[in-house]
Image: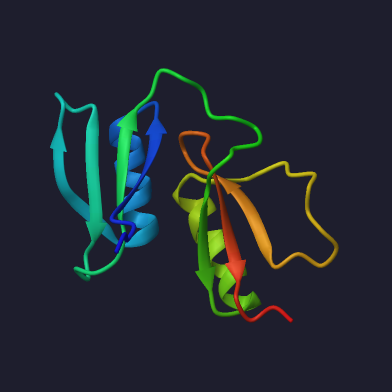
Length: 123
């Protein structure tokens, strides 16, 4: 049976990306290799999907084909997490594809990668 072990994303500056995602997700560095061009982060708790960061020669897309959805319990937690992540260096994306009454907020990380904060309690 297949399971997702690591989700990988391209970055421009490894140290900045490691700092952001480690703080954002409470992850730690598991390994760095390829002369610093790849770093794998893992949950401090020891369980969960790893995040691989790789130096990329291509710019992030405005409409990415793949992105992270990060779940929260309710609207209050969503607002708090958006504020916390913006404080860590993320930005609220200029996103024109929101449906009416969305359950998600689109952010951009320090490297320009889009990700969403999804309110799982949204009606």
